[in-house]
Image 1 (cartoon, one colour):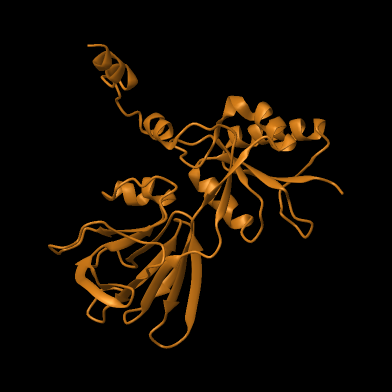
Image 2 (image 1 turned 120 degrees about the vertical axis):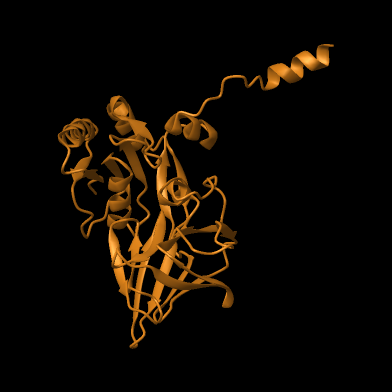
Length: 284
């Protein structure tokens, strides 16, 4: 049976297409077929060339399979990507030989109950954002946790994020960073007119309920990972819970998330002495 690995380059970037060609040649040398579609035969893994947006697109492509994603960062921050472009050939060799670990990331499942009847569903790896369909208007939302009302306020929207998504849109909106192994959901209000409108973290079995109140000045959209959307009219209700399926990321290095955070955000660490401080204290 032919081994097949999915290639997902950002089609709008010449460097991504060039990097994909380097990977295709490396796969061919190992007797592995490169494909641009999952197809009926399936794929054993996927190599993604681009930023986090391309990684999110690839996650949608392999949803429902066990194929892990190995990301080559050609974007700006690239939290989901494992490698930089100079590592491609070496990474392909490790992927083909199975020399990698798999990091499973939680997702969210979204259910929209429309006011006129009917239900729409979706999912996201990073976040589900409830936002205004008309940017000139304010929306009125009522928030509940596990069916119990928590607060109502006018706002530009709310973000419900996974731990993975805590470094994306939610972080830009003032939310905390959660380590990837934290099994929780994060809510971050957007420009809310309320005293109690701070980020909120709940456990993995809790469900956020969001009602779009009739007095809202506009209808809403639920935007999933910044790529897919569901329209929600006034009077609709949105439920966001921990997703049934996880996304699998291939890891070829065992560096801790702290190092990734420092590197991606260029955080200052000068002055940290760590074990040296403890050692010098024990000697006095």
